[in-house]
Image 1 (cartoon, one colour):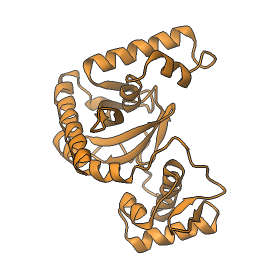
Image 2 (cartoon, one colour):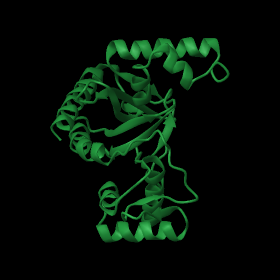
Image 3 (spheres, helix red, strand yellow):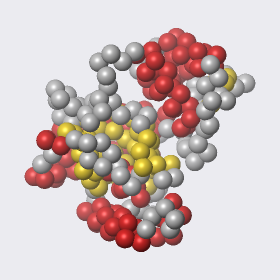
Image 4 (spheres, helix red, strand yellow):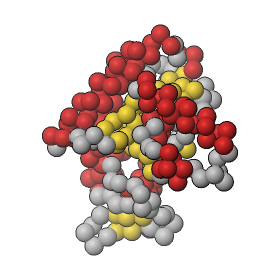
Length: 247
């Protein structure tokens, strides 16, 4: 399990998170940056100006900020500020209901990005995951999103020279299992000692949008609690989709 170090320098941590957001989203305004980090507009502005000075960001003519020479925006990533703002109340709700950390991930190609995160109230909990990226095959959110793909689409993401026949069959079986039961599990595949459970979040039109995940230390994972966890996640997912339709 990788938790936030006790000696972390907050300003450095915020600057690195902003750099990751710029690469993921392609553009940020000061208000978006402030909301994402939970800091004041003046603090967000100082951080962005510093990134510009060090060539990690550039200011566009409309006064937004975009990736600088040291960063490359991912062309497949869609802006997530609106999704993050809509999702955070429900992440807080699930974390309060379950006691565990909750996060929202979107898929970009074969990877998932954590675009929103709320730490659970338990004393010993999974640390901050905001802006983290993983192989979609390994995360619970990534698996529930990949389960929506057809065989051809999955083959484009994971070609034959990357996955052997046996590994591809195992992945397909796991994705089918996840889709059938309505949730996916990651048992220590991304981090030792961490288990995660995720359900799908759809757009108001019904398309796959994100994965809503609950992460916890392995010692607190119990099969008997899965119905409660999945129920809380599923209810939050439905409310998030409803709110996106109203926005």
